[in-house]
Image (tube, rainbow, N blue to C red; front, side, top):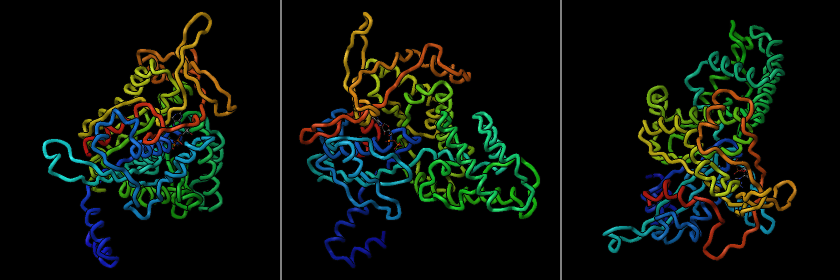
Length: 465
Ligand code: GDP
């Protein structure tokens, strides 16, 4: 702080005033995570746009107290800025398209000028609250579990999962390699490359709990030697051998990649949103649903009292006191089915919620669409009236009505077959098409259309404003 003040002094008195308030202004650090394609980029873009133009935010109680909201330079100079303007332009152009998704960590500061509420409202002047939004891949959060594993423990689990997901190419290559032989760099590189391919293929097939997360989304470590290791079966590891070196690189990954990420980003959050493409998992089948459930429980082990607490203490974690779980893309369903989607989400995250609650965090589960791409209709079909959603299809550009099938009223009808390892849903498939964002005509003061984004903001932010 002194550094920043001193810095401001050299820049002139006007800057000192703004820096002094800046240093003392309350800040809320909101983490937005979820696995790739869960909807993080669209969520942040639409949330910020709707906090700046609050015409649709009726369910956000702080709306009436916010005078203005404006973007400011973020406090952390070394983190890339979330490319809000480019993402918003993609969504709101004349021919709208989805923005590129999250590939690495990024940050955006939105400052809100808020009038005080309650008895003192007339006496106190408006104050500024900074909202620092940190976007990061959920894949990286799964790496937290590596901190308490040895190389052999991790290898054992990783190999079990590769066997489950039929990654024969890697397993064959690994079996042909000799862990005790002297390390040859091309062998290590080739194993790491095949292991990465195996992870990608498992992910495509519906696996979520895959580590190391940076192999799937390397961010700034693309091509780096920190990512040239792979699991091997247990055995002797003489000095200079392939196995010894793999183990060393695994440990280096933990201390040089995983730990700094948690210290610099995760451990500094106040609030967290976990986005889940629950509908996408249901479409992929029971196995994907069970994977998603297990991955979320694992991700939230960061909140588990006991086992990992040493880590959080070590990192000086600020406690996340609210966690929102949101099922995204709810605009694929007619609103009559939203309660069922939320019930499935609640059942899916119940383990994770218990952990979070035990650690003192409040949790909430909501079905949302950060950007509504469809309209609702009732359609006659073979003598029945069906609640459908209509939109423009992403692949053909054609207008289409979608009836994705009915979600069961009892979430256990989805969760139980998933946990029991069923291969397919008994009562038919859930068909979900991908829609393109719809062209928008926004009235002044209105952000892009959404479903329950105001409720999400209410839970995450209202009490701090
Ligand atoms: P990220 O990888 O978590 O950053 O995910 P994105 O925000 O890029 O979203 C991935 C894809 O999901 C987008 O390209 C869209 O196709 C879709 N999507 C995200 N949010 C919504 C939404 O609110 N409604 C609909 N219909 N599709 C969405």
